[in-house]
Image (cartoon, rainbow, N blue to C red; front, side):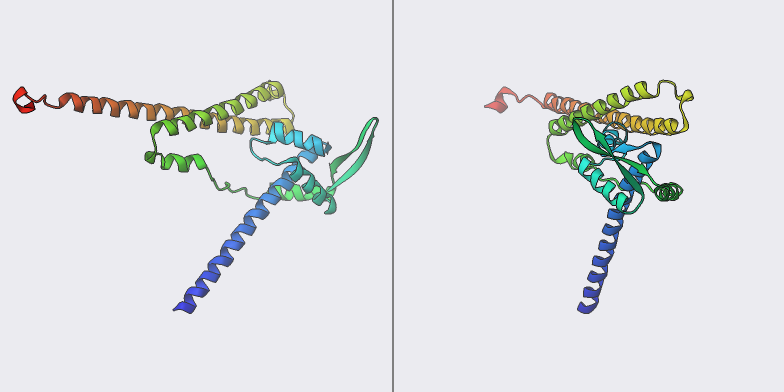
Length: 230
């Protein structure tokens, strides 16, 4: 009995390790292919890629400059990208990266593979589920904070959309599919902002309703007579 329990625990441990490794590889591959995708559009320096992540890619995939440079080094070592050193007068030389034929082949193979939805881990949903244990004002404050964050991101995306994609029908193929990623980001942020607004309104309505019920209960209490008070 105890032997079987030990075996089951070992199997469970191995399965968790496999799942964890698979998730890490998925994240690694997604970053590498995101970089290959950007290089397939045009040559970029590491700085250019970091800027591109901040301005155009960050709403669906985020990476730090350190992660980007580390990934570029790996891709260069695998022969999927190649770097050209560009001399700059009065400034440090920079490396300009381009995708190789092998890199483009790898990217095209990946593009044709199914893309499953990624697992969601959202702290706010856990907080919302447990918010009946705290005062409503605490949850309202957090919802208002998150609403402001999503509205700010939404405004940035809409500003970029106006600047870059004023006339979607005249876009090139590569610009058009980039435009669609912006539309997804806009829908994502607007959906979150709208949900926060709805949750705030419903909580406020519920708090007001409970206050009215409590006041009504107080008003319905019989006033004790003078004799009873004595």
